[in-house]
Image (cartoon, rainbow, N blue to C red; front, side):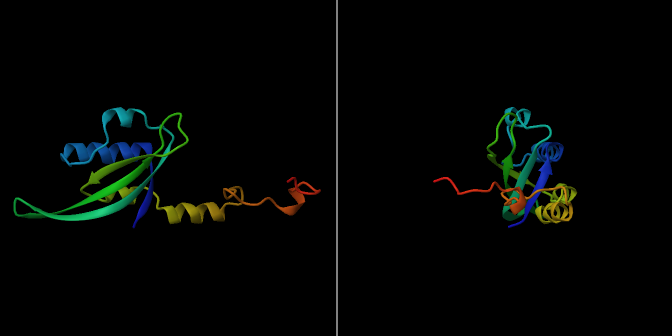
Length: 126
């Protein structure tokens, strides 16, 4: 399964292109309006469909999108069908973000244990 990270403008562009192509799964306008403008969204390709429409072979990708909505900490799941992956290559892959974060000394990995010198001394509370 390929997983990508997308900004809000990238998700809006992919959704607009899917609507213009009359694909079956698009994000409702009300949901797009609730997207966090500075949010980061996770896209995962669930299914690749090979079709033949009007004698022309076509490929469609059904994706699970975990959306960051305004004022919410929980991801909102939605389905989205796209007919091209060009938008996905415009966003950074998860592996690239992890590599950048590990190379940057100022980025702290979530859940990391603080260095012993910064931990409080004494007996742990039970």
